[in-house]
Amino acid sequence: MLFVLATLPSPPGAGVIQQVGNLQAVQVGDGLAQLSRFGLIEASNLEDQGLVYNIKPFSRLYILRVINPKQSASDKIISRYREIESEFHSEKNRTINHYYSFKSYTIRSRSEMLIAKKLKEASGFAARGEFALADEILAEAKMLDPSYFETYRIESFVSQQQNDIPRALAAYSTAIKLGPDQPQLRFFYAGLLMRTGDNDSAADEFDAALEQDRTNGLVIREAARNKMIQYKWKEAQSLLDEALQIKVKEYREGIKLTDLQIQLYVRQMDALVKSDQLDPAVEIAVLLSSYLHSIDRNRFDSLTISHLAKALPPLRVVRAQLPGSAVVGSLIETLHRDFLPDDWRVSSSPPARANGEQFSGRLKRDGRKSGFGFLASQGVEDTFVHRGDVSPSLWAEMLSDALVTFEIDTNEGRRRARNVVKAN
Image (cartoon, rainbow, N blue to C red; front, side):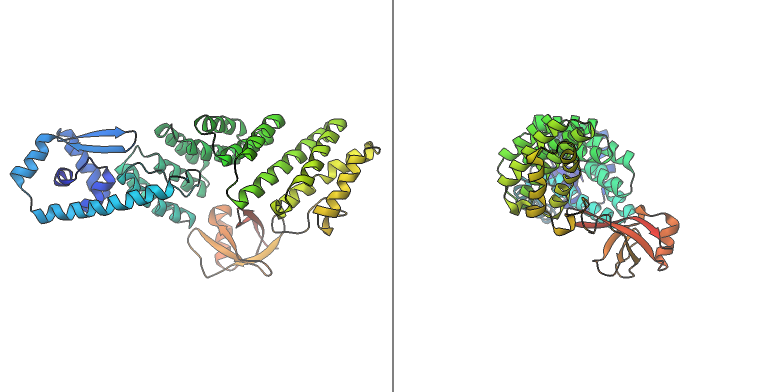
């Protein structure tokens, strides 16, 4: 290992040492610890490179002059290093503008790039329910560089897949301590906090993320969603207005912004009606009506329509108690005529759709893994089911072809079974 350090042109991280030296992670960890103990190398945690190891001048001189390694051995190490160098520059250019994509990794050094490749494998194993393999990779990554924040971000993902929320939260806390200048960590952490129902803490994380980066519409949009859930209407609208000022690059992002604006109007109107503030509710109805007439209809999808349909109950209450409000009656008619399918004309509930609808099916034999599988049901696509979402006894029965009933939860186009129970 000392020979590798003496040969490389710049101080490497543990990941590079492992790759060019063709070593195991435990060999690298133990070797670096011993070399540091004897004062032959020195570790430095650089802001733009992470943890790297410098060989002391007398150590380098001893290797090159006294041991005098073969040139072919040096050439092999340099060749491997150049391959890493080339891949590093390519990967860094590819991910630099995608910090807020969960599948993107922040890499500041060649060693972090190599560790990130391992973390991608861990993420894949976790998604397939192979948690032992995922945890094994995480342990290796921590051994190579305990200061790399991306390791703890992926540990949080692995923990969430196992429904171990305390571990997931603790992992993000560690990641943020190691990467305090990484706003995307705050953003991802805020999302997790929202899913656990801790919206106050999520708001703090969104605020911290926006203090570091206020140029990304995705972060501002989700901060607005958080304020909406907290019934902080004015703050939510202010953030949403800010997000709308940023040029939308993706079609789906435009749909999500439209959907969030509609949700904000509908939820605010519903809250006002439930607190008997009918006149302010009418004012929101006017804003919703104006917005619907101004928006591009291509920015609607089925989920947006279902959220829009939720405006009907509060609007009907207002129409019944304020029969002279022409704007409310006109808005109800506009919703029925121009936006909502026939299924909504009488009921305020959306027609039968995947979310909330009951299905029955059996676990397919094809594609089964130890931690997940797919439920086959007539009339719908196969639906992913995770072992952690059902009891151990039910999972055992499902492996024996037991018939179950379930609902389908869709998120960003991904279908997942929930509320799985054995059929009567």
